[in-house]
Image (cartoon, rainbow, N blue to C red; front, side, top):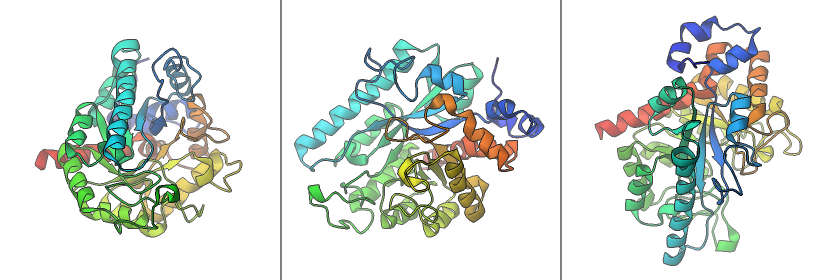
Length: 356
């Protein structure tokens, strides 16, 4: 069945979807997961993207109607030395190569790589799944701004400025004592980090504030000429975890035109012991009530510790849509949550880049 584009569905077709037909609403919403981690052996026999023992593989994406996912180039924080910068860059390339191997060599008829927001629509219209690329942890550029250009050329369309532990770009929400981190190093974003954000704006790469300290997140929004995203964070008012965004940060995010992708990561939802899809949507409700439907999306963090009762892999994705419908969200609103809001921010990043 040929999939309708979100742009078409956002008006007449989505509005015409009946709440009594959750499957139709789900398909029309163009579900997009903004954060799926992959192992270093991804796209090899050890981790086959089609049928491998992964929370997100192509068979499960099809079964769950998960049209699109950002596959993540993640490298953890280590001591900041030239040798470690080089190793981080090499590790990043391993994951870039794996994602391209999936889309270009192994399964090009099943999944295509999106380099622009409109590519998501074009590829789904052609009946294929969509892969996009995000970077988690700006540590992979070390102190070399040219690496940012290289990664953009390889398809990276967002970058999480920092991960666990401070880096040369910004302060982390979770300093790493084993690396000698003080509670804060830069007081937010460093001078180098400001240059990084400026270059990201020029390229059209979305700035991601997940994992950043509150000061760094607020400063990143101040510095960025384009709206920012929080690719996998939840609401601190509901779960008091340092990785979640408090209401002040969420309000600033809305003023900035950005979007927070509520994440199915157990520790960030409910009591962190046995959260469910209900807890996930509680966080969506809070964000909608606080700053509006235009500023919230969804992410799983599958492969990186994500997974909750009711959404433990890509095949279970329709359960989230069913819960949103049960809460009274309209088909059009569900379309915004699943993909429309993030695609809007992505397009705005592209627009800003064209002007800069």
